[in-house]
Figure 1 (tube, rainbow, N blue to C red):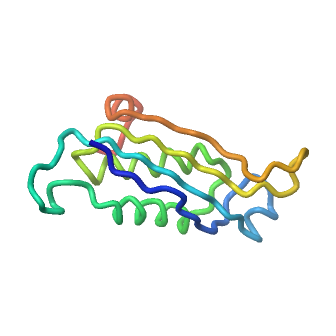
Figure 2: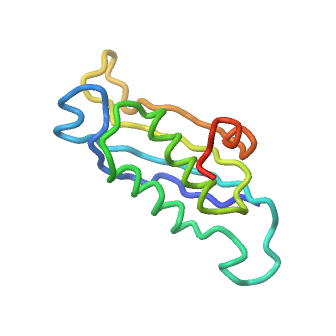
Amino acid sequence: MKVLVENLTVRGRHGVFDEERAEGRVFRFDVVATLDHWPISDELLDTVDYRRLVEIIMGVVEGESLHLIETMAWRIVDQCFSTSSPITHVALTIRKRATGVTGDPEWVGGQFDCDKAAWLARGART
């Protein structure tokens, strides 16, 4: 069972270069959270509310300014696992509007996959 959020677009002040942090950039997020069970009730408490996934992403983006998308991804994954016990795997794509990049790509970014065992092995917040 998977819960997903696609094409969440947020403006944030993240990046290695001063102008990225001062002016901000547009980020786009896709997240797929795999659950350890398929809820058989019709109760929201028996699943992961996709609004919570959005809140986690928004909290990281609106929080401390970061240099690396990799750090941003880890913080999002960390919060997904630490605040929702049914989540066993997170697949996250982060795109940043490319400005001033040679070749003029529309987006740059990364894809991040992490299962709970790997998260725990990396020193998760438990």
